[in-house]
Image: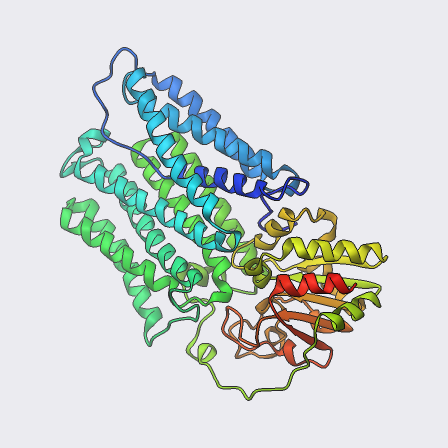
Length: 510
């Protein structure tokens, strides 16, 4: 089972992914904590606490059903719908419980229309290749929203029934401080992740001497600041806490290399959930507590599973810089080695004479939008009685499930797609491996070079195939910034071209 199942069901029209992306984005915007000063004192039309509690419970159940639905590709659409419905209920009840019905309903419509429209527009315009950046951006918004809510509650506690300035309830102040700190870390960390994924900042780890001791000192200072803030309720300490939290968010993410970015995205997702849950306790909002706890715990579990699969330390992920040391990240100039290159005719010849072919998709396929051309090529191969399977690495692309989503968009049957553990032993018996844009997840140095930043990460055993066809624009390194030894194997034929065009040309020659 995939660690992050696809959200799009094969069998739908290719354009349907954009609609589903828009829906998912609306839900992401809706998870941002929203609060404001009550419109007026409780009037006759205000919903009762029991009314709110019942519907918050309903929304919480729907969120749980959403997670359950997303655990399987077959039920992922239904899971998305459950999540959307639950969030709409939670937002509606929140607004209706703050004033009279007519005024509250107006605010419900305004905020849902504004936030939903922005989210839908962004998701509709965003290409699937940029989905990791979109997720990182949404995580930053959730963290920033938690910070804004904490600031509002600290400056005007009367509006939230938390006490008065300088005399805030201790429990609320602790929850507020923790939520604000985690939210600030989530925001700044997500910004760095976005910059790395977007290519604005180098994907290589950024390290400096004394980095880890500095991070440890800052983390300890955050704990001390929270204690002092709760003791004195000083506004100066509150602002210092926010500044230090923003700072540690940057420092935790910059030493993490591109190969480990999928784990970073998952971990930041967890942080955003805990930030929302902390603010939920402050506001005594049941829906926010449930939503935050679900997001936080599921993100943490997914991060643990991915760390285990990549041979990484879960605690080092939390502390930052788990894939980076000064020795492992230092780049050395390697002598250019010869490679064998071919064309579409050569690739078609090898495939026509094969009995089994394994397709290995990667980020290059996503960039070229070659998934539909790949599906056509596979259909042609199957007409010639050639067995075809897809091998998916858990972190292929730049976020969990990235390749699954793209293949589902091209209507690839589920029973042809296999995870690393299920198919890795089949490479030794396969005639041809067709690697389309995957790089780091096929690099043999992960098993042979202890100095490599990806050493210990399970990779697809592509080199064991009789013949390897590797589609790539050039010999440039992958996102981890290291050379791929697979390029230079005797059984590897490099196909230097755009992934979509090369796949189409191969199909014409089959």
